[in-house]
Amino acid sequence: MEDIIRQIRNELDQQADEKTRESAKRFFKEEVKTYGVKSNQLRKVAKEYYKKAGPIEKAELFRLCEELWESGYLEESFIACEWSYLARKSFEPDDFRVYESWLNRFVDNWASCDTFCNHTIGGFIEKYPDYLSDLKGWTKSDNRWVRRGAAVSLIVPARKGKYLNEILEIADALLTDGDDMVQKGYGWMLKVASQTHQKEIYDYVMSRKNEMPRTALRYAIEKMPDEMRKEAMKRG
Image (cartoon, rainbow, N blue to C red; front, side):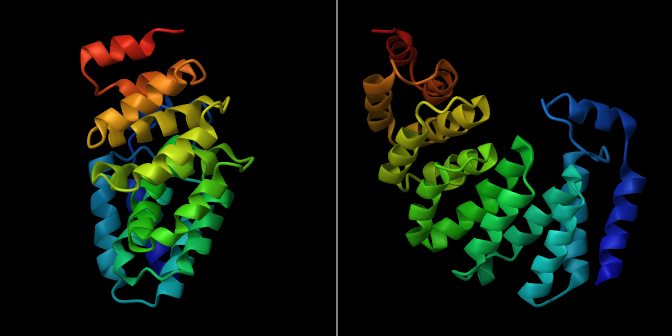
């Protein structure tokens, strides 16, 4: 199986493009390692090599994912995210601690955070909602990506109208967080939730708009009608 990681890296090297690499770097405040592979090509690579790996034990799959994460390359982290999500039918409760450790140890930018949390962790939470209480615990982390993860792990469930109470509790816990990446994360969560629970999210925003950072507020109300947005943006 070591050979498959080598094959993936060779493939990424071959598909690397300097223009794409420089363009990708502009999306991040922090320095990122990237080959410069376009996202549509990257998805094909991830699926092709997942299929090529064939049926393997989950422990081995997780080991390969960890090796990809450890490289620090953006594209390799995306492949690890895709693989852990493709294995979602075999989710078991103990997997949560593995995912939590990856979030703490390896995630160092918003793109890896969102890709991993939206899909792998979000899918896990839908299967095992008892772990929502763990997401609430993440809001107290010193790690900005773990705090953001508490919110963005609920993006996909929020689209389905799920977990409104927990969404509001997480938003409350992150309400005055000073990190703009966290503010954008919970604002995004509220925005998505507003598409199925517009009144509840609007009422929540109106009751907290004087405390909520403007960054989070703008994200939260983005999909609301003009009049609602104007009222929400008024202070006092």
